[in-house]
Image 1 (spheres, each protein chain N blue to C red):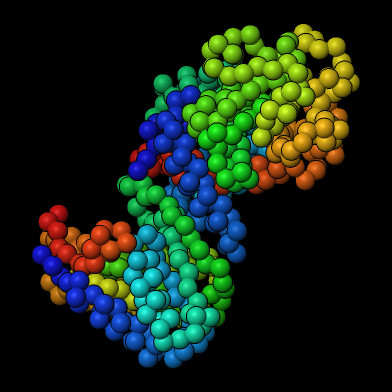
Image 2 (cartoon, chains in turn red, brown; image 1 turned 180 degrees about the vertical axis):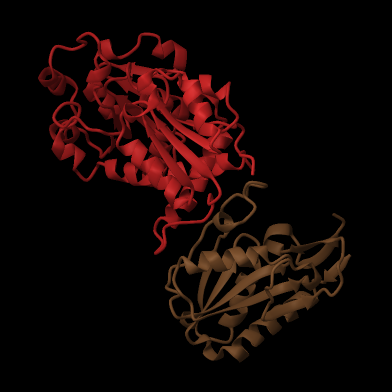
Length: 309
Length: 174
């Protein structure tokens, strides 16, 4: 039993069986993380480089913890303190690192498709930790794992992805994954932040009225407004965004049901989500973070089978 | 070829459980741990036999998956199954149960796995079939259902009613 791919570049390339295998393996790793000794010797002869060409807190720490819990040797690379700042190309950097007997690459890059390009030129398995506005597969997997843990299943769930869809790799990976696993997907937010082709291209629903979207869904996955990726203003002010699309306690209380609230972090409190919602009892935001380590352990474990001893 | 028949299996399981009770009276300070996935079929039967002799709360029983402790993951990927050890093994006698003891590598991994749950005072091993001449590590069982004294080219397959439709142990051509 193994994954059908050598790399984890995106959910788009995965089979449904791959996703199921990753989620069931993650369940076992979650149990490992509850033990008195939270470390297993599984990857003790494997060296992994974390190549982060873009800032990250959660994802980088989560990957590093996952690698360490699996007993892998870890090398961290951040672009600000590296030769990339001197103009070395991505492929040169990676080939130099790999020639020092590194077995696997975890990579985040601001250019969409950067890990896909790399995968055509190197032999080591690559895990995409986010590429531009394309995909963030491990985030979608941990979101799915958290939904399954909370609600018992993914198939048939109604999931609303809310906010800055246009600039979000989390949205795209989530949409691919949820469709493959048989959930219903709706995106909601201001029309300026939702690409016009989404509905036809991916077969999902688009709802510009946030209250209708909340009333429809079982799970609301609320995304961060990515101000750093917006070159032109797409809504008038953060305050206005919060009033029109922010998830507030009042909005949730109007519903006649309790929906599950998710957010991939970091949260802009008071913009896309109010503090009393983020910290409220419907929120599973910190469970998502906890599950991230187990899910990444599963991905690393399942891809290591493809490395050469 | 049949190594243990459907008629022989229940008496072997009864014998193994009696040997465990004889050496660990009342299962005091003792826990039973079956190895996932296939050792659990045997441990389920042994635990059922122990329940006939002892009050239920004296039989402490868990299941251990050793996938993440294997030494061959770069050669072959195994699918992990559930570990369920809802009790402490600190200072206890642990009786590990598996179906076939072959190279000894699974038990080596199981000992490693066990230590991440605490420090047992003793670990004992109970298996249904002991393929002694095929051992690659210095590991021996304390209780065994049947010993195979010859180095055979056959694969030993333990079949259980709940999984394979029949209760027996057979030899298969590789």
